[in-house]
Length: 96
Image 1 (cartoon, rainbow, N blue to C red):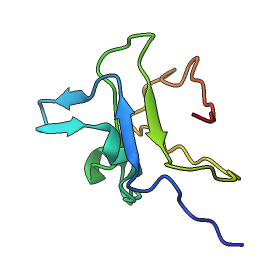
Image 2 (image 1 turned 180 degrees about the horizontal axis):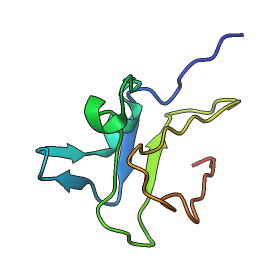
Image 3 (image 1 turned 60 degrees about the horizontal axis):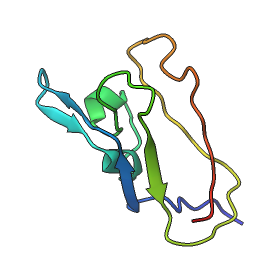
């Protein structure tokens, strides 16, 4: 059985989107599931989401629209060497 990205172009939300005024880009939740895989870096290829600030209640989620057997979750992180950005991150799968 081949792998299928069941999250691709599904409804994604996050608490707040980072507004990168320097580059004129807003890192919205949908950028994480648009199917674009960074060839250079997420910052250059504009293909990831980022939340505003360091709030403990920041979240990102995707609604798959059904039940799926999940064999793997790929997370492509930042490439600007920010230490500890995934500290206390929680990955969970839930039936809603």
